[in-house]
Amino acid sequence: MNSYGKLFQVTLYGESHQEAIGVVVDGMIPGTVIDEALIDADLERRKPGAIGTTARKEDDTFKITSGVFNGKATGSPIHLMIENKNIKSKDYDKLVHQPRPGHADFVSHIKYKGFQDYRGGGRFSGRLTAALVAAGSLAKMMIPYDISSEMIRVGELTDLSHLDVYLTEIAKMGDSVGGIIKVVVKDVPVGLGEPFFGKLDAEIAKMVMSIPAVKGVSFGAGFEAADRLGSAWNDVFINERGLTKTNHSGGVSGGISNGNDLVIKVLVKPTSSIQKTQTTYDFIQHELSQLEIGGRHDVAIIRRIGVVLENAIAIVLADLMLQAKVNG
Image (cartoon, rainbow, N blue to C red; front, side):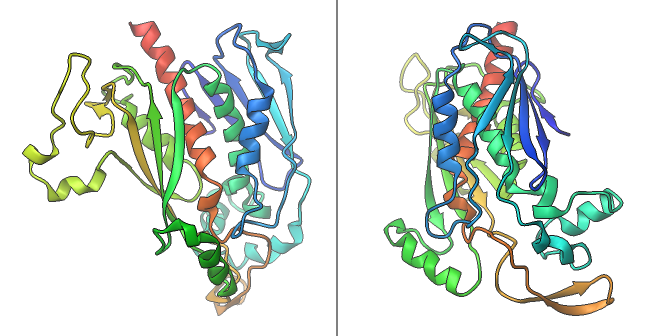
């Protein structure tokens, strides 16, 4: 539901247009140095500003109210809060009766019997990823792994040197695009993952698929396995440390890290909220009618999601690292 993890547990709270969003993180190793500059830097990476990103700009100043003393984790839960300040809720009133195609407006209205906070997408907004990024920053203070990400495709574009021009054209059309991001984690030891239902790749997939706009996850060569024979797919060992000649498995064998780099590819869908007029159902008029969404939305949320994916994966790795220490 709203929490993830066994030994490193993260609980998200808040909605897009309420006073604040935030996170409670339980399981920080006592004495861990809390680097607030790292949290600031990660939140800065998530902010809009580049071509194709939203005009909603929040300063994302955070406040830690518990779990830290003299700059170090005490071992008790850490509470971190981020205020929502740049809010324009009136843009969302009509979406109660004419929900956005591709968004959670309709399903959330049915599931929560109309009591949901629909403003800005409420609990289903990408705004919640700011708190997730902050939690991942805390996780990164504990784990010794190197995590990076890069866009490898945006819409039809694979030569990203033309990205700004491409997204400018998409914006002029009033539309949006998705794409694919690759995340690589280096320095991962052999042994992370708790089969059967706590496999490393399964846990990463669960976490990543929980992020708004993510619609697919693969590891290593992923779906390319369908086109290969086993002799071409298998990763051949080349030394006693388990290093392999290839890394088609993406660093995971049988749900356990095998010592090679973790390689995860993530499919990010086009933003549902677009400026282009759409024809969709009106639940008050009981007929199809035109919908103009308005508001401030990303043309390509993929430009901001890299750090979200990195930090979400860091949360998984922190939890499994602690489990490996307990079980080992």
